[in-house]
Image 1 (spheres, rainbow, N blue to C red):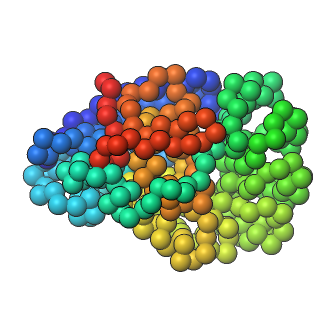
Image 2 (cartoon, helix red, strand yellow):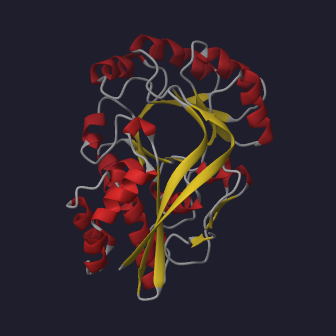
Length: 337
């Protein structure tokens, strides 16, 4: 296989704020894998929380580029097994795994969801994320993008007041994501107030390793709680049973579509709800997530909707959440630049 790596800086429509950081741009790596005249595209974004930069991903991939070029590609699963032995970060593996899956579909001439036997007649609507800002700015973002389902980023000293203020401007369903910023007691107290305000669930209220705290939350919380930072890789899924009602899988963190599909199956067997989330990727990463839609209870795939300019075409999310799957093989991605 031939490999090409491309670095892009994605400019956001608005400053995106969460409990621990905010940013106006998102650096991202696009991996291109070519074989037999077909090219597959994958993506992984930089992430300061996990100490990942585009340069660090490019450096470690280039260190094994010759081995990748010599690999006898047959299936994405075999390729992922090979990548797992190369001591790459999961973010780098994700970019390559997404590209390999897209390439595989293009070589077979079919969309991934068809290859996997996932009928697309029914799927969850993506939320639209409102990052932390002034209440006025958060209201402005909602009014700019009328949507049936919003994820509200929280982690301030006035979180319930934020949700109460936003509720005055929409009847949409809310989800809230505290990004590890709350205590168990705060989570339980907030949950009753948030339930009255039409919140569907709380995502990752406590620090990722606070498992004892999550037991307290599960015992007293008025709303379901979904793991994010507490569920990174496949081995974390079983840990979440009894501590969360569901998990949010991030392709970049777990290493791509290949392990994500195994995590979905494992979570289902454990009775956990399944969500897949994005990391402000372009349409390259979002189109990969969309291939999993029929298997999900919830989805957060609004990343490309938050960008000023996209770098690819592929799956399109129309108003009110309808997803248009392109009549193209693989993940349906065509790179613009």
